Length: 141
Image (cartoon, rainbow, N blue to C red; front, side):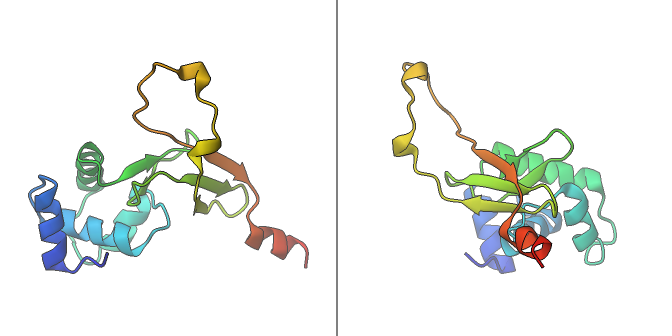
């Protein structure tokens, strides 16, 4: 989905969020940059458009987005939190060299959930860490 200002406003309202300039810009940034950005990365990108922007307002916006289930928190390690606008069931791979995070599809039909039978599962998170194809190719040259 492409979020022009009007469609972003409608999307936020549909999810019970009062649209503000910051909320619209953060939503548009997340949608246009599916790179699982950090608060710092979002701040650096938006500060020129919104001179009054603070990191606190971005944190607050992302917390609201998390509460309303329009973003997911990606925290593969304890050092940083990243945000993902794709809330569908999928896995993440983080490269140890370039630190990029890649999405991959998961097939949950093959998972054995007998050990947690009778539990209610609210979220599934699958993370892998290693070296991505691009970094492997660079090291082989």
